[in-house]
Length: 250
Ligand SMILES: Nc1ncnc2c1ncn2[C@@H]1O[C@H](COP(=O)(O)OP(=O)(O)OP(=O)(O)O)[C@@H](O)[C@H]1O
Ligand SMILES: [Mg+2]
Image (cartoon, rainbow, N blue to C red):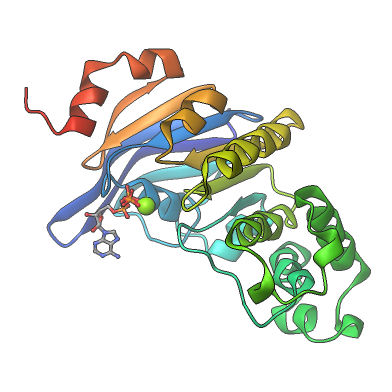
């Protein structure tokens, strides 16, 4: 049994097949890249596995249990956390509160209780929040308003929120977008560290060096279809992948 099993998953939007009969998996502790040209269906596939979009057909299993049709917070509580392609940071909340919102689902406590006042927050939520903040190096800025963080730090804030759920699978949608080369390299090292500690990661990224440099397997989508699923060196040399990126017809 794989940690995450994606089986013949399809999602249509009207006449458009955004994700077309995709089958793949993520093993426990694996670091998998998901790449493909703009509009290939990467974010849609993430939305399908994390419960934000309903499947048209197919099945998704996480830790052996069917999760298609489950609500996002239920899937999150089972151990799958995600970040979003567009930052979802609450600018007028503190760094701490932004992250503690992430652990409420897992703790079965209401977001209201988690956000409003330390009294409403359980010790367990605080512990998870501190742990996640330390992990991403934001513990010292816990009381800072999120709006005052640099763009790069806000990206780590989002990751901290996901980590506060103590996930077994972390799915990251373009975490390096908007980062410069050295920030991207630092992020790559950080993701590697998370993975070295046993966390399975599925990563959507346009930065090819980042993906090829840290992933042990790369899945390639083009027009919703899976066209490759192999180790980086094999994917890099695959003519179908090159074609998909260059838009060349056979
Ligand atoms: N809610 C929606 N309604 C209609 N069409 C959608 C919806 N979400 C996505 N699509 C379409 O599905 C296709 C796949 O989009 P998706 O966002 O998954 O691509 P992507 O691979 O993440 O692209 P990018 O690299 O630009 O983020 C696109 O053609 C997009 O316009
Ligand atoms: Mg996308």
